[in-house]
Image 1: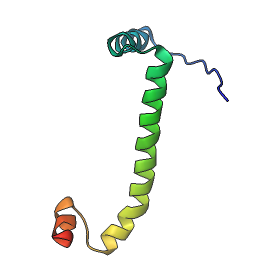
Image 2: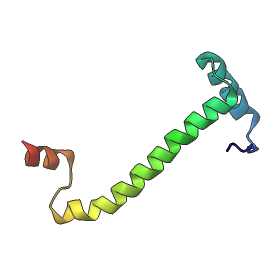
Image 3: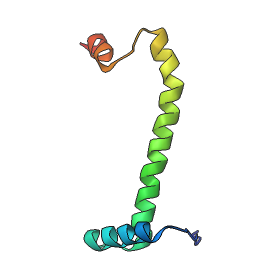
Image 4: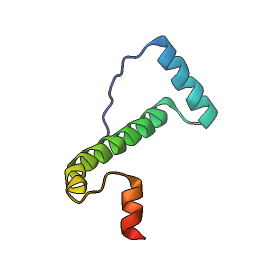
Length: 72
């Protein structure tokens, strides 16, 4: 089920939104939904990362190089 949500934004944000929508051949709603989905993914990634950081530190994994050494 769809619901309508009203969002308040500055004139500058609205201009940028309209510019992106025009350049991407999308409407405002599509741009905002895409942006929100990307934001939701980032939030979920951070949540998972924060859960895993202590486990990685226990395993002495502190960098991408440490991961590479383990899988090489």
